[in-house]
Image (cartoon, rainbow, N blue to C red):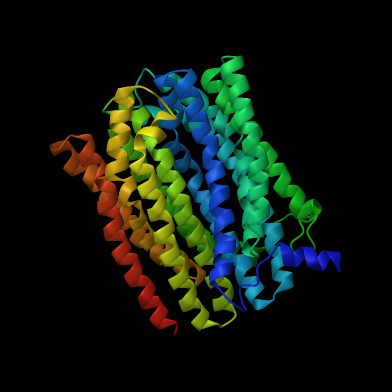
Length: 452
C-alpha cells in the first residue's frame, strides 16, 4: 500500500480529469530543474566575472554554443525516450516500459562514452574554427575540456530524468538539482575565491555537482517499482524500443545540432566584436536561457501529455493540451522577458561591472530577450507534433526557418551592416518565420489525425 501511494505521489494521471493544473504541476518543476542546470553555468560566469576578470568570464561564457553543438544529438535521443515511455503508459504496456528503461540506460552509457572522447578531442579545434579571441582561447579550451570530462554524469542525469518525466515525475529530478546546485555554488566560491583556481575551479565545481545529481537520479530509479526500476544487470538494447526512440529522438537531435551550428556561427560573428562583446553577450544569454527553459518545459509537457493521450485515443484532450501549453508558455516566458529587460542594469551587474561589457549585454537584451516569447510558437507546436509521432516534420521546418535563415543572415546581411544590433536582429526574424511554418504544420497534422 505504501508503494502504491508513493507511485501516485510521484506520477501524474494525464489521461483523466482536469488538465490545466496537471500541466502546471508537470511543467513548473521541469522549468525549475532546467534553470538550476543553467545556474551551474551562470554561477560559473558570475564568479569568474567578479573575481577573475572579463577575459575569464568570456572564456566560460563563450562555450555554451560549443557545448550545445556537441551534445544536442544525444539530448535529442532523451526526447525520444520521453515519448516512448509516455506512449507505453497510454497503451498500458508494462513489458514495453521495462524494455524501454533498459534500452534508455544503455543509450545513456553509450552516449557518455562517445561525448567524452569527442568533447575533449575537439575542444580546441572548434574554438579555433569560430575565431575565439586569442586572449581567451587557452582559458576557453581548459574550461571546455574539464566540462566534457564530466559529460557522462550529464547524460546519465538527462536520460534518467526522461524516464521519470515520461510518467509525470518532474519533482524528484528538481530535488536532485537543488542539492547539486548548492554544491556547485559552494565549490565555486571555495575553488575560485579561496584557492584562486579561476576557470579550472568553476569547471571542476560543475563536474562534481553533475556527478552528484546523476548519482541521485540513478538511486531513485533503482528504488522504483517495476516496470520503471533500473536493474544494472538488465541494461541492454532492445531493438523495438531503440527504433522507436531513434525515430523520434534523432530528428530532434539533428534539429538541435543544426540549430547549434547556426548559433556557433553567430558566436563567431560575436567574437569579431572583441572580448567585451563576448562577455556581454554571455551575460545576457544567461537570461535568455532562463526564459527559454520556461518554453522548453511547456513544450515537454506538450510532448508527454500529447503522447499519452493520443496513444489512448483521447483526441479532444489533445486539442485542450495544445491550447493550455501554448498560452501558458507565451505568458510565462513573456513576463520574465519583460522583467529581466526592465531591470537589465541590475541583472547584468551580477556578472561584471565593466561598462563595455554592459553596453553589449544591453543591446542583446533589448533586441533578443525582450521578444523571446515569440519562440513559444514553434517550440510548443513542435512538441505537440512529436507527441503525435511526427518528429521529422518540425525538425525540417525548424532547420529551414531558424538555422538556414540565421546562416544566411550572418553570411549576407551582417557583412553589409556590421553592427552588433544587426547581428542580434537575426533572432526575432527567424523566430517569426519558424513559428508561422511549424504552427501551420501542427494544424495540418491535427486535422489529418482528427484532433480538429
